[in-house]
Every structure is written in structure tokens, then in C-alpha cells.
Length: 301
Image (cartoon, rainbow, N blue to C red):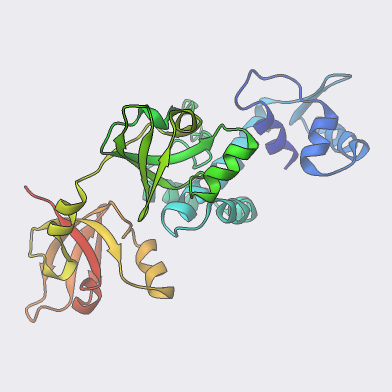
């Protein structure tokens, strides 16, 4: 945790020694305890201690901290995107399991998530050994075009504005869409089933992922939305909604059935049950009554 704390402190700026009191404050320990631990880490060769200035990571220390941060941020993306957890809760859980993730699980997790480069906090996910570091690429929310949506990765507002935005549901990790812009510079936005109206000043305080997605008109989506069980062999659809709760919902989400993913019908059993699908390159078999509870939008070829 000392190595990760030092790494995060200089992540968005030039590598400089981090003062011991700053490290101690971040970890919630006394400066004398932090000083003793830094000296031990220096003896192990993972930090350099510079008297009166602080500590900085050695190449070995940076490699260790990058490995842990990669695990933490990949788990954060999984927990928010796949299990639909709140970002704060996902962050706490990811911090607990980051140390117990083997390299094989990390690789599988990255493959499953299509190799994300930033987490929902907007921080870069360290790349595997030999890879180039990825700088955070975000854009102000007001740069979205009408019909586009993206994920909020950072709120850069003052505390009162940040609290107002959070109360309206605008917080890191949520998907937000641009519905319309006004002549006076205000914006109509969509979060889930809710619509909110924000001024240009507020939208400028919100940073979203530079990876954007197109929205279809609501009526068109409703007209084309059908149960997954209605698709024929060769048909493709975009997952829109899972009408399940509890363990069944979590199991399907873990299999990749998340909103926005494309799923295709591979084959149907002679009696119509079960049905084999392909999603994210993996085969998935569902009972017909299970597929009936999944709503998709047909992909027009």
C-alpha cells in the first residue's frame, strides 16, 4: 500500500519525491511510522529515500505498484460495468481483492473486458510488462454531440456543485447521454430513465470517457426491441435489458450479457430448446424461457 500510495501521488504529474507527512496522511498513520516503513522499503530496493524531500519509487517498486493498480482498476471496471455496482462500493471491494489476483486471472479479466485503458475514476490502467503507459483521455461532457453517450469518469466541480450533481445521479461510473442543446447554452441529458437539465458551466465541470456511443431515437429503439428468444439462426441483436433479479441476473451479467453488447444466434435445438448464442466471441447456451426474459434490439444487416 505504501508503494501504491507513492505511485498514485505522482501519477498525473512528473515523478518527484513524495513528502513523508503526505504519505502518512494518505495512509492514516503517524509520520514516524511512515518514516520507519519507508526506510525498510529503501533497504529492500523498492523506494529511494531522499532526506528532507521524501520518497520515490525505484523501477522495481514501480513494477510492483503497477501490477497492483492494474488488478485494482480492472476489477473496478468489472464490478461497475458487469455487476452494475456503485463506483464507491466497487472501489472498496477492488481494493480488497487486488492483492489476491494471479497473473492468469488478470489476463482473463482484461480479455473479458476488451482491454480497457482507463478505470471509471478516469485513471490509466497500467499495461502489461513491456507495454506503453496509457494517458487518460477524457473530454468535457459538453463536447458530446446530440445522440451520443459516454461514461462519466471525473467531476471537476466545487463541493456544492459536485454534491448537486451527485444528487441528480451524475457521478463517476454512470452512463450519460446528450439528448438536446438549448440556444442559451444549456443541455438536456439522460441518465438511465431520468432526464436532467444542466447549464453549460456544469457540463464543463464533468469529464467523460473519450469513447462515445451512438444513441438511437427512443421510439425507434422501442419499435425494434424484441425478446432474445424471437431471433432466428444468424440474427444479431444488441442487449438492452435483463428482466431478472438476484443470482440469475448476476450469472448472466458475468457471462457477458451486459447492455450494449451484440449477441447472435448460432443454432437452435430441433425442439426449439435450448438456444446457442455467441457473445463477445464465446458460446452461450440458454433455455428458451431464459432468452425470453432478455430484451434486444435487432441489428439490421
